[in-house]
Image 1 (tube, rainbow, N blue to C red):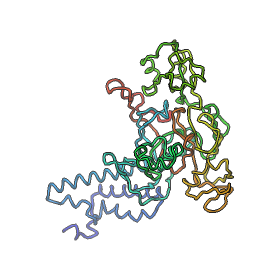
Image 2: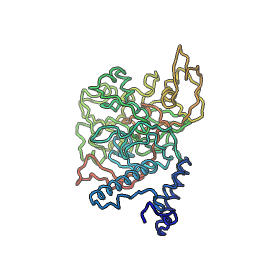
Image 3: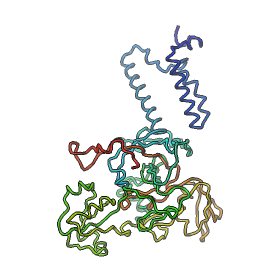
Image 4: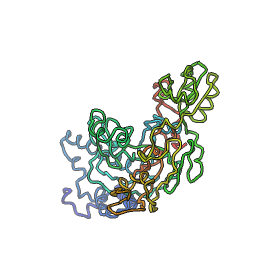
Amino acid sequence: MTTENKSFSSRLKKSPLQWAKCIIWSILYVLFVVWEGNLWWLLLLPIVADAFVTEYIPWSWWKDTKNAALKAVFGWIDAIGFALVAVYFINTFFFQNYQIPTSSLEKTLLVGDFLFVSKASYGPRVPMTPLSFPLVQHTLPVLNCKSYVENPQWEYRRLKGFDSIERNDIVVFNFPTGDTVAVKQQNPDYYTLCYYYGRDMVNNRKDVFGDIVYRPVDRRENYVKRCVAIAGDWMEIKNNQVYVNNSPQKKIDGIQYNYFVQTNGSSISNDVLDKLNISVEDRQMMNNEQGAEQIKTLQLDPKLPIYHFPMNQETLGKMQKLSVVVKTVIEPPTAGGDVFPLGGHKKWNRDNFGPIYVPKKGTTLALNTYNLPIYARIISTYEHNQLEVKNKVIFINGKPASTYKFKMDYYWMMGDNRHNSADSRYWGFVPEDHIVGRPVAVWLSLNKDKGWFSGKIRWNRFLKNAEQ
């Protein structure tokens, strides 16, 4: 009797093991659908049962072929297809790998750290661009083309997580101002480039800036920073000290700043700098042309060696004890350049910033010409309203507006390497729909300054808690 001619009762005569598989996978599927919140997906439950028991759909038809080559090819296709679906599912709802590319979180997380990022911690985000290649953020390597199909686009929705973002959590998120990208110059972001060079030049000089591309929310670059303020907080920075709701941020050992280091004429050896964990990339010696005005202002002697290092308090203390070091001075705030909101006419800098309110969903804020530059991008871009100002009157969706009610929670993210971090001080708030997940552990750490047989693998960081 062929498969097509089997009666329903005969199809149900399966081994106990096959029935057990069917029951287990059906329970898992139902639990996932309940978690996902779209009960319409339960209509596909009979397909799960069919795969294990009734087998009306010939899932493994190729196994019956007598053509060995065809059987081998479809065997590989079946295995690769299952692997891609499994990876896509796990990567979307549970865990994602992330590599630290820059020093913005040193010395908490190091360049070369590979992280397990839990998406279930804050609740996995249902894919907003569902048709995408797994394990690739936005561009397929080698082919150098998009790794996703822009349509369909699904509205933002997040499943229930185990936790919520708290102050000082380290968070992975999609880069908020990474919606529009100048391919050849991605740092600073497109809007900062337009601020400094003009939109026409950025859009038209492809030889310098490259093509201008748009990326959906979940296809934007992944960033990792520390959340210093959550929705509903007031945040301010005074002389490098972060205050949240008028209370100073708790002490974090990894936080570091840039310092000028004056010696007595002798050099600081590379062996000493290795022991102080100052990377090769961060070892800068100033000359008469570099930072001349700063050197003069800080009363440093340009005739003697002057170094420029990022250091946390522990490293700074060790540096000051070196016999060759005569003076250490923190880098002044003027070195940081213009900060958020660009063109907003605020007398803020990276070391003295705010106070600023971090929007909370459902709260209503009085709008005026002073705070509009701070919240304009939220209103127009993140929450999709038409925003205009005519004769000093604010219009939202064509109507005069003196207040605005926020539709999402927002967060203020900063790097621990405070003087070398492109963070919220430069591009503003992180909307809740950009949140990816929480780093939970370092599973591999590679030191770019070392060889494979001279300490490249940082064994002491294996399975290290990512937030310590």
